[in-house]
Image (cartoon, rainbow, N blue to C red; front, side):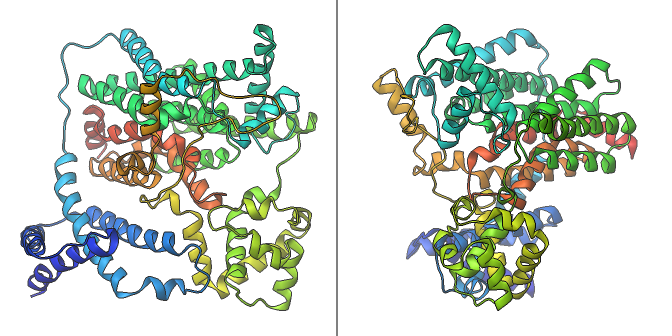
Length: 575
């Protein structure tokens, strides 16, 4: 009886969800044809035993789309109730309709993909020759971006770090000291070749551009060694060469680019660490150096590494003691650098507001929506930042308006942490709907795929140094780069979409688990850990550069479940 009811109702809800969620106005004969088609799909679906994992993923994705769109449309709304607004009949129909659409697609695709085996080719390519070919091709495919924006693109952050490096003023860890040190070295090298201010930027761009192409080429070789299929290699080269994020980001002066490259290396090295039966001492040294550099290039990366340590202890059995010692040596070295060495050189710590983005945004939204506070709560918030100023400074998309506001009192927080945090916690308990709404909005870009936002820099911002771009003007090349960066184009927009890549990551994890390769989940932790830190303390609701490592690792993580038959055989033998 239930199946018959669903067979009739589900197609109608699927049709309506297309209208409510995507604005597709379907009418007349098309509705009848679509309904009949969906009726057949649902009838076929209801007669199958569907994997629980697919059901869960489909439910998550449908909730993701509806809640995400609601938050996106209402982020500046001061009056609505989040829960009551979300639970209107259109949203409920959309959740159910999208669930059936997504489960139909995933059931068809994933049941076929999970047992797929790549055809291994007998004639293997020479690794060195393949690496050099890939490296040269990638360098050439990124050239249009370098020519259009020569010698680099620079944001306000980039300019601040460049200024510090130029003046040898790198003694503050609001930006990673190692990155500022690299810029300082580039400044010194640049001076050797030219007295022009643009010379250090050229040196930096060459180093980053080459490093990124090198690591990407290394990942292609690594995949080929495990799958041995030329079509996969060709696809990876085209992916890295043509997807615009890599070309745009190869020439921007951001710490996140080099950090992302080292996360890709760390992911590869972690996979090797847990799959090698015998590990050479030199590999431990390489892993240690890659991991340590990775942690030093991102302030919050240490939390990712702690998650890696915990996951390894839980999921891995062989050589566990050696690996735990390796991880602990990285963590200890990191803290030796961050505490005694930084203290010795009087390197200043970053402000506490850097770690308070989510709580500040939640308090800010409560005041933005004119929620009445008690006298004690008012006093605490006013001491942190005057409420009237807070209302004006609050921006749903970023915490910068609050934490960089001249009226924000960081000293008050540093001296009254428990009082401020307990006030924030009590406010969240008293107004959970606003707290949840604020959290969803603050993290929106990292899970909701359908955003329109600017993702990249394409200039050197106005500055006092006389820095400016000297493009190689070519109309065809400029047009190509312009189209690649057109985030309003639906195809291009999805290539930049963080949420879409997070969805692919979830599907990859599902495939990994279905192929009974649970312990290989450890190699996903560098990327997952980076995402977790953003979900805990992101300062911006959607910042592609913060998850550049996700883009770099995406193809690798999608292919790991299919790495040679050793994965399945090993797990079956262990079983």
